[in-house]
Length: 453
Image 1 (tube, rainbow, N blue to C red):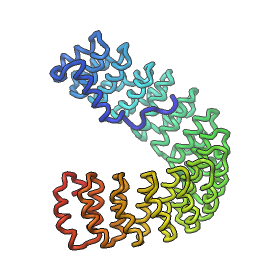
Image 2 (image 1 turned 45 degrees about the horizontal axis):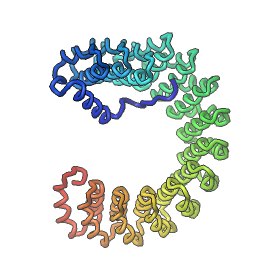
Image 3 (image 1 turned 90 degrees about the vertical axis):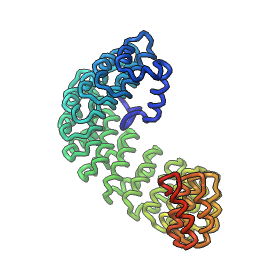
């Protein structure tokens, strides 16, 4: 089935609700949405939009009388109606829908298959046994969808059936099983997944490497080191990620070599993995990676150096504040804040004027970490930045530095039009602990945003 378009659950609920409400209003009328019998009748209307609108509305009403009619609607000749029926059955969450939804995993429309898998996930443990049986279905889409749902449900009863599915004739089923086992994270799956690193399908090997990273078991270390030499870049990429999750210093040298891989994603993940391991041997190779011709690799190297917090990285990271890629500059600013070295003060103050708001916010964060009073005036100016996130980080930073010069500007920030900024200002004033702040903070208790209060 390949990568899923909908990961980890339903389409964002607010978007769906807006769509549902609009469809219900236009196709059915507001009064009709209250009438279950009428809506069930409308599932048989000649108009596709009326039928799909009825399905969505029945899901909102959440009346179990609609279950059987909605199950029948899973066979509608219009894919939007079938999608709506599956979604509605997920809202009602009745176990009678399990078997029909498993059948919907073989729908000829990919969106229907995806929503069916997500609804089965939402139904949860009552769907486990039927889904285990579906792993043996003669349709690979059903098998793959069942594997996905079982992984999301995360029930240990599924481990052995999914291990068996790693030997299925269909590569999509095997990759789905590997992915599911990575979500369940049971140590019994380590050896079978290690074998799957040698599968003849690269997508299966990729998912097996991902899964082993999630399970985080040292038995996988040597096989994953070998997978760094796989002829498929996605497999090497996942192997690098997985080795970073295992965090064993024995993987340092292979990952340093992976910084020279001809694929930029592999180099980037190798850099991130080295940051997670935090071994000082990697500092110089990562500094060199700050000059890589790929911006993702440079940002990964900056992030990793910030995790390791070695002062040898300060000057190279200061240079990275002038990188032509804003994401690299942002990660360099963050890293300098984590390392907390005064040499970065002036460059970070200059970065408060960067044309990218993420870089400015990163610089504000970093100056707050270094806590040098020279940063107070520039951060006060940053409280007037046109980006609210920058203003928020500036307020936080001023709280960390704890200098009385910031009191009046922070009191003014209590009136900012953004609640996060007001909250940051209130917290900062609480840190400074000056009598001038008492009355403004009492007034802030009446803020219409609970977070700011």
